[in-house]
Amino acid sequence: MDDRIEAARLEALSQIDSGLIQGAVFTASGGMPVIAVGKQCVHPVERAMTEHSRFDIASVGKVFTAGCCALLTADGELNPDAPFVTYLPEYWDGRSDITVRDLAMHVSGFDNSKPYDSADREVFHHELFRKRPVRPRLEAFEYACSNFILLGKIVERISGLRLDEMAKRRIWEPLGMTRTQWDAPGEGPDEVEHHFPDHPAGQHNDGVCFHCGFPIGSGSCFSTAKDMMLFLQDILERKQFPAEYYDLISTCGYDRNGDRRSFGWDMRAVHRPRSFSDRTIYHTGHTGQTICVDPENSFAAVVLTSRTGDHEEAIRGRMRIIETLYGK
Image (tube, helix red, strand yellow):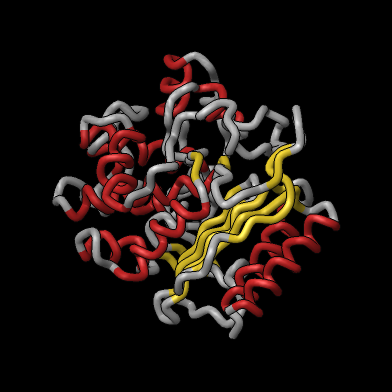
């Protein structure tokens, strides 16, 4: 294991030297320690990354929205194959054949336009519920944050709780995830500086999340490598929650033209580490994060970085770190 850790550390340092990332914190299943390299921030003073560094995990937070939906499904309160307007009848004219599962797999027909981007709560909701799909459901995969914002609204409608409170009560606290939250924590000694769009450390980097001022299902949570590993380790072990929860998030529900999705997770080969099985589920975040679970090979990994370079190259860079940690 020591050779794998050192190789992964050297890979991360190479990415720092190339300007792709400012720093990284990573770990993997099997008792691997948390490794930190590079800088946590450079403004207003330089701080080194540590195992306690907390990142804006951007779209990786969508897995918590999906997880809340999966738990409500296991409770018998949510039918993933029901039209989503069953739970949100205020959408448009209350008619749509788009299902909850369609939203979670990004095959609803919505595009990634964001007419709801507003600091005015009333405008936000009005535009969210007026947004219409650009194609029929299941016709094509298109990643769209509005899919998960709607899922978050469904979670709140069914549970009667704010989205972050639902995640805290049903996922984070049971798993011992004490450093994860949805609201921006603000300045602090462990908050990581990101660069999209140069918001201070401890603030949402996604513009919609920054403007709206309340938790939304598209993500932008804050977490640490240790907390995220607790979350992934549980998916490997399948011990904390009902079987329906694990089955829903880990089963491929859409497979067409190379686009493979489970409920809330990516399963495409394009960003899957080499040697990992096609059962692997993973998610990436715009600010520089990748989490993945391969149940067939009993392996999970977390790579959290502060990205400063090209988006696609940074994803490939995180894949290389994970492949090195896996070592097979």
